Length: 435
View 1 (cartoon, rainbow, N blue to C red):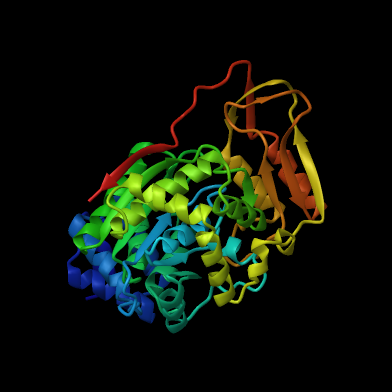
View 2 (view 1 turned 45 degrees about the vertical axis):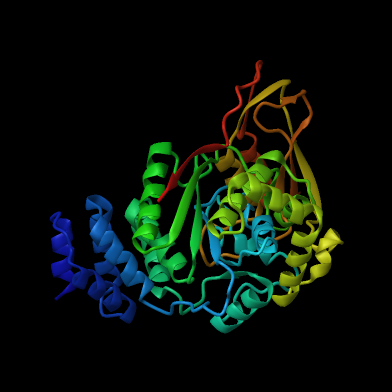
């Protein structure tokens, strides 16, 4: 078979066979299919789609393009969580040690931020010395010892996804449900999991702007997991305004520590406990969400979750003293404020605008090869429904580069809309999908 034959078949709306899909993915990873040929096939998939059978074969081919983890030596149930990305979404950082402290193993494999959405790895790496690049053996050792590991995708794990993701970004085929779903699920299936929780973000600050499209994506991913025998649940959660108050890297670690010590913003705490409860239920540690929430609260207030986080930080080369002394986290040299032009109620606090402003400040990246400044960020001081007076600060900006500050502040001014009446509160959880 040839790449051209496969491209033409999909272009013309005909289904690809399992053999054709496995061949083209393998040939692409081996360099026998060129980038321009694969880009043409991706565009055909973007326009025509994949059937359920094709999607299963595509995901399986990506999964088998490299190494699959063997975590059979870990006796506890292994449950991971994945978010499709948002602004201020640091949920994984307090969630993972809370769940692990309740006896469910969490092999958390995360990604980096791109565009206006933050990345868990960038946030973790703001902890001095913390290593997210672990070989499979060390990954398994830390998980077996502590019941928790927080790392990135290895070079040998699903290499097809790494290549295809970059090509999708360059070929305009990123917003494709089957391509997004296969990208996420191939990596999760390679983790040797017993269960998976998906947090599909919906709204202005998410990649999925429309609730119906987000539900289709959630249903697609749950279907892939179910067909592979993986217990999978998905939640649709709002991302019109940032989650929590901090948008940055080191500052989001600090806010995560607030949650682990029994505090933190209400919206962030709600999502952490919702997803954590479902992880405990899937892992068999609790019979229902109510009992699971009680267990999570117990390990937070006893200090067990925070203590476990410190042990994992140390095991991955980081400085565990940041738990008691947050001044050890990177700190920006300067602070500025954006003030409200008038009095009234916040009717919009736009997550995407704030996320892009944080990126311009240096907290994020537009291209994968760019570095981030872990110290800079934005603290959101006024969110939807809250009242502000003229001259009161809407946001605090921690900055190191004056030119970047100017760009960020000019953009940030358009993020808030202020009205005379408070907006009706909107739900944070928009729905769920179960297998």
